[in-house]
Length: 433
Image (cartoon, rainbow, N blue to C red):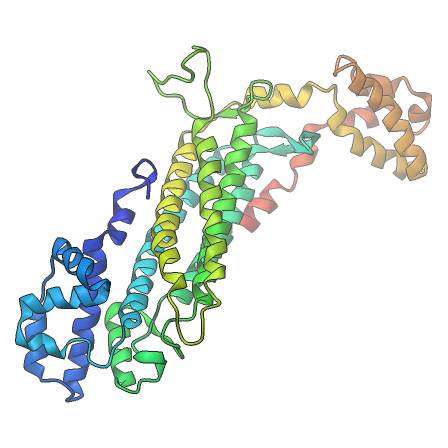
């Protein structure tokens, strides 16, 4: 966890105080259930809630001696509870506490991420409607293709993040399970009713069958989902970065008063936020691979996954939370330049309308191959002139074209609004309006 790329609410979930509080609640709820089953005295269960407390520094001190974090925790709680503490952890194993705690932490972290996505979706939708009919060039291979609208670009991003939200909801369901099944998962020394009670109290579902740990395919899917979301963050960030290039400059990150872009060049306004998002996305994706490698544990349990998850759990959720919040701010404050978009649309002498002329010629009776050849030979002259020559003028002077299409018919094929006749349909599909 790097403070520069962290937000307090998400960080708090992974702080030692939060972790040990969850451990305590798991143990206390389990003891309550054991008391209801008559396994331990009800007075002991009540005493644990009444007197149970812990101290992080003391737990660390004990762990340095015993080399076991759960035992250190239980020892510290017992120092405060007294005699009744002997009834804690009856029939349980360490993984019951650790795995159930991780499930709670990931579920809580996911709730924050879902809220992040809701805010991002709202920001994208607002800007999409603002520029629903703002003409801009659509590019393939980085080269001018045909006209689109800037609102349509943002509608695509909205649809992608909406899919990501649905994926994250499913990932939360997958990860939010409780296992209180004892050594090797047989319930030999603890009743399954204890697991069900703890699951209900901690807001989890019961794990249908665990070994000594919750199966790690669940975690693999979860972190893979975070990686997909991070990739979508990068996709939108890269779009902004390209649009901010000096020779494009159709949109750019907000540049605040007093902000500096370069230590050497005072004129610079750099896309530092979206470049940062590209880097953060790489980090979140990198956590998916070790999560998948954690699936193959030895027999009923080993701890090769433990060190991995102590890192990737906090780091992946904290980093993605920061990235989603940063991207929302970028979109909300994004500077958008419709005039520059129109200028770029026009700079290649009408080449963006070549397909309409091609189709018109085929409809007039010329073969597709000949139609393509006729349009391309004129288009290449425009290309080589860097847009100084207008495609429409060349076509009007080409006898092969004018033999089939009048000047008025050609001019109609250069109507920009033609390309936007289905934008309302696209928006209705995306936003449901």
